[in-house]
Image (tube, rainbow, N blue to C red; front, side, top):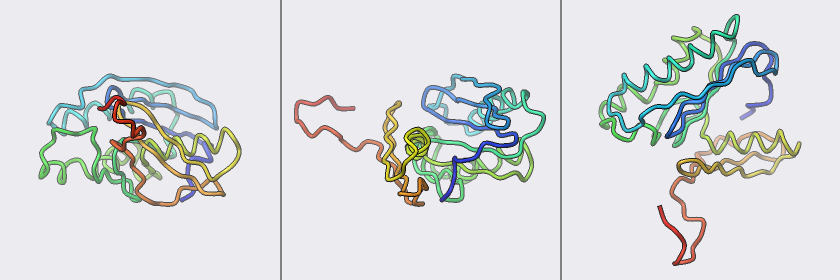
Length: 182
């Protein structure tokens, strides 16, 4: 998967973490606005999450004349089709409600924000791998994001994602029996 290499035009990005929603407005590779909005991921109501994410996106998008594309990242498993297959930023949404209201939340948010613009949402660890490729100008990179939990992603020799599910959340990195645990 080729992604994260072009920020021309007017783009809106979001990163959903366990403590806040980060949003960024970019026009022709220049950051116009960056914001953080605190939220309560423990809220079991998907409408709360919808309202918080959409509100953060709308506030940041005000700096753009239009939105040409939307990109995002989230903890957990995000499908190749930008679906929230299993994202631990919605831990208390009941499973049946999750399937109905959360799995396609990113697609619905993008449509509400900007109609039928391109959308790509990936795991936060995959974003880290792409950022490393941009920074070091080389591929074959494993990126590890260390936020409220950990995520990982891999970019191949060409700096592209493999399309694999690469969530490493809750994997122990230190096998020392005296090491701290979650």
